[in-house]
Amino acid sequence: HSDQNLRITFMIVGSRGDVQPVIALALRLENQGHKCKIATHEAHRKFIEDNGLTFYPLAGDPKDLMALCVKNDMFSISFFKEALSNFTHFMAELLVTCWDACKTDTDVIVENPACMAGPSISEKLGVPLIEVFTIPWTRTTQFPNVSIGIRTLRQSLTNITAICRKLRSVSYL
Image 1 (cartoon, one colour):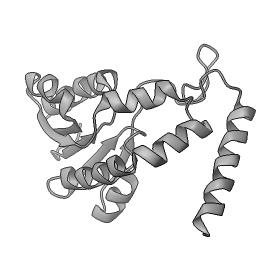
Image 2 (cartoon, rainbow, N blue to C red):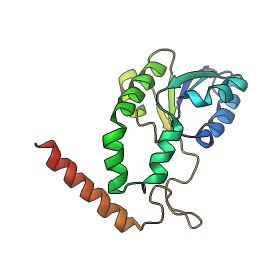
Image 3 (tube, rainbow, N blue to C red):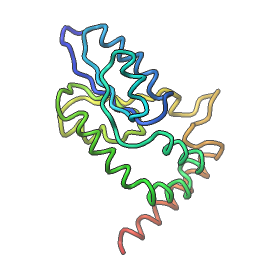
């Protein structure tokens, strides 16, 4: 544990299952003298504040995000089509609220991959970024990659390639 007390901003997009482990980590860090702020969806405010931590609201409703993931296979054409047509406003608001959460009083940013704002904000502020994910991000012998679901890697890569081709052709119009 460092003698320097850090101001740590957690940016977490997702369900209670994404937020709960971060609360445990933030409580431990605060116990060691650091100041933690958890920026996430309004739906999680009470849970965070009931644990004595600072809450900052991020845009979006985790129920809408979970519905998108359940309705469409991750990285499928339907997933990206739905996300591009119905979630661009959400993404714009999310990025603004992430910036607002970090622009002052942040020495370190911790985010989960669903947030996506961390690299740009970290670079702009000149502060370290730590990516956290509470489930295996890569395939293990016990669990396949959760982002791919039941599809094989080859099928998923084929979908991603097809989506990129479509986006490239649209961007030149």
